[in-house]
Length: 101
Image (tube, rainbow, N blue to C red):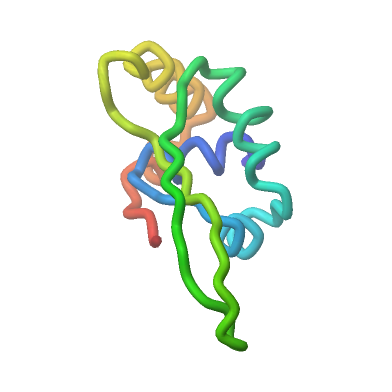
């Protein structure tokens, strides 16, 4: 399976991508660029970006974004094309998996 399809099925299953889990699960170090290049432009969807806040292990304030796929009318056509692409590659079993946050 390609990285593009792996990301698409993860987001379709309700997964949320951050810098940390994008690198761990998919080997992507620049998630903001890859989300746009691999998901939003080819499929015509817009991912939701949620600004997260926290502290490092040294107590320093930090922020990052969490990306998710919103199932709404605007993304309906793109979600349909994601599902068609996954079915074309015969990944029906994987699409039904639950995404880990």
